[in-house]
Image (cartoon, rainbow, N blue to C red):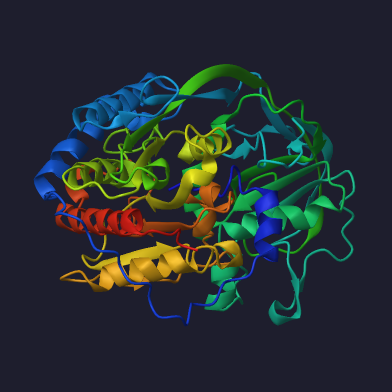
Amino acid sequence: MSSRAIRGWSLALVVAGCRSASIPPSTEPPAPVAAISGTLGAITPDELRRDLTAFADDSMRGRETGTPEAEKAAAFIAERARELGLEPAGDSMYLQRVPLVRERIGPNTRFEVRGGDGPVSLAVGREVVPFLNLGEGVPLPRLSADGDVVFVGYGISTSALKRDDFTGIDMSGKVVVMLHGAPANADSAQRAQLESQAEIGGRISRLLSRGPAAIILLMTPATKKTFDEFAPELMRTVVPAGGGVRSRTLPLVMIGMAVAGSPLLPRGYPSDDRAQALGRRFIGRVELLREPFVAHNVVAVLRGTDRALSRTYVAFGAHYDHIGVQSGMSPDSIANGADDDGSGTVALMAVARAMRSAPPRRSALFVWHVGEEKGLLGSAYFTDHPTVPIDSIVAQVNADMIGRNAPRDLYIVGPRAAPNGQSRVLGAIVDSVNAALAQPFTFNREWDSPTHPEQIYFRSDHYNYARKGIPIVYFTSGLHDDYHKVSDEVQKIDFVKLGFVSELIAKVGVALGNRGTRPR
C-alpha cells in the first residue's frame, strides 16, 4: 500500500477528495452468485509460504522500483506465470514496459538559516526533506527559496480550539513554517483529523494563496512516524517519463521534524507555539538529478471458456514493488515487504493456480503492478496503455496487504467509495460470495469512503482502474506496526488467513467470470 495518496500527498487529490461524496450502501438484495463450473483447485498455506519466502527474501533487497532487484522480482513472477500455463499478455511476453524517470536529491543541495546565533545548516534527509513534485496534474514546486522565516503554529484558525494562527502574519514572499500535529487543547476527534496524512495536503493548500516563497511543514512527536516513512522515499522519487514540460510555479515545499532548539522554531518551543516572525532568514537550493529507465508490469491471462465472454476480463491486481533498503533501521536495513505487498503478489499466483482447474466463461487478467509505492505508477501506465481493450475489463479486484491481523476480519474498499455508485453491484456480489463461505469474513467498511482521513481509497492500484469507470473492490487486512518498516517479515504472515483471503478472491473472480452481464 502506498503511503502517499497519488505522489506526495497530491494537492489535486485533496481538492478531488473534498468534492467526492460517499455512496450509501445499496438497499437492493445481493446479486445472485453465478454457479461455479467445476471445482476450484486447493489453495494451501504451504504453497503461499513457499512463494512468499522466496519473493520476500533478503536477496530481493526490498524490490524498490528502479533497482535491479525489482527487475529480478518481475522475472520471478513472469516465470511463475509461465509455469502456471498463463498466456503472456504484456508487450514483451509477460512484461509490459513502463517508461519512468528516477529523480533524486543531489549532493550540492543546501539549506541554511541565518540570523540569531549565526548561520545554521539543516541536514538534508534528517532534519528537512524537499518535495520534488506534489502530484499528477499539479504544477511543480520550485527548487530554491530565499526569504524571512515566519512561524504560523499549527496553521489553523478555529474558535473551537481558540486559535487563529494566521491573523497579523504577512506570508507573502516569506518562508512559512507550520507544525503538523494538534495543539494541547485538542480533543481526540480533533487530534485524529489534525494529525492525519490527508491533513498535510490540506495545510499546504491553505497556504498557497498567501504567496509564500517556501512552505516547511514540521512533524511533531505524534506525527514523527509520517516523517520516518516518507523521508527516504522523498530523497529518491520516481515519476512517469514524458508528459511535457511542467512549470515550477509553486513555492518550495519541505517536511521536517520539529525539535526544540531548531532555527525554524520559536526559541521557547514547545511551550511557545504562537504564530510569530522569527527574525531569521532561510536560504535553500535543491540539486535535482534525473535518470530515465524502464520498469515492468507483469501481465498474464487465464483464457475463459466462452467464445464471446472470453474476450472480456475480470482483472486481478497486486503490486510487487516495495520500499527497498532503508539505511539506519534495525535489525537490518532491508524492507522485505512480506505483507506489503508480497502477500497480494503470491495470492494472485494462488488464485491463478486454483482457477486453472476450472476456468470460468470470462477470461481472468492478472496484472502485477510496478511502482505502486512511488505513486501508483504501474497501474496508471497500464490503465492508460492497456494491453487488452480497457472497456473489455468488467471489474478489477485488488489485493494489497492481506496477510495480517485478525483471522476472519477484512477491510473492503470500493463499493461505497467509488464515484457514481459504479462499484455497488460488485460490492453486492462480493457480499453474496462471502456469505456463502463456510466461515465468512467480517467486513470492515470504515475505509470505504473517499473522505476518510487515511484516504485508503486513493492509496492502492485499484484507484487507477476506478478512474476509468471500471467497478473495483479492494481487499486488505489493514495497517499494522510493521507497515513500511524492515520488520514486515515473512514469519509474521498468517498463512492460513492469507489462504482464506485468496480463496475469497478466487471465488469472487469465478462468480464474475461466469456472470453473463457486467456488474453494473
